[in-house]
Amino acid sequence: MIEVHDLQKEYVEEETPTRALCGVTLSIKKGEFVSIMGPSGSGKSTLLQILSFLDRPTRGSYTFQGKSIDEMADQELAHVRNKDMGFVFQSFNLLSRLTVYDNVEIPLLYSDILPVKRRTLVEEAVRSVGLADKLHTEAGKLSGGQKQRVAIARALVTEPNVIFADEPTGNLDSASGLQIMEILESLHDRGRTVILVTHETQTAEFANRIIRMKDGMVESDTTIVANRIRVNLK
Image 1 (spheres, rainbow, N blue to C red):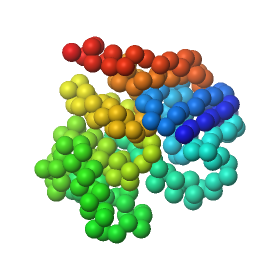
Image 2: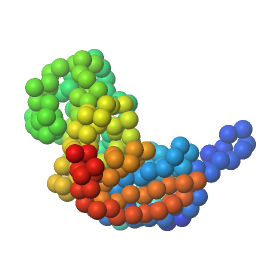
Image 3: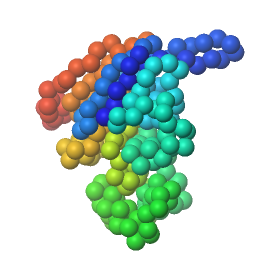
């Protein structure tokens, strides 16, 4: 699904370049659950932004589902991002005065899906994260864990091929964080590709592969034993 080779990213501030990525090469197959870990400044968030089409690399190649992003204009990147990618962020990014239904429906408003079909997709997505009884509740009245479940439903509603999760448990207590990771794990079990950025080891170990970043490079890329996290938590 994803192939990157010699990926580099530089930011320039006051004419001084800063290298955030220094030659990252990796591939991610369809259906994998991958965690990207590393300390602040390691390049993990920059890598996620490039993989999710939120930024472009300075140098190197990136092929998504067999097509180079160099061949895609910004408009096509936006179309692929909305159709094939779902996003879950640490800060939820919900509109607090809108209902759960309205928040989850937002990605569908940019498509040509008919309203009746949109309603079905929204209701199914909300039901899948266990919030069917909150469908018409304002997002601002929900707990942190519930808000993150709404964010996951919003990520699912377009039926994307890959879900990007950036520190999805960072603002949650341990019990709520565990619920969120179990939802992501169940999505992976049903065939979704999940790419997670986290600094928490127990959260990362829900994945079946951990990529560790350091100084803009891949320090290690390891497959872990299935279900080890459940032993640690119980």
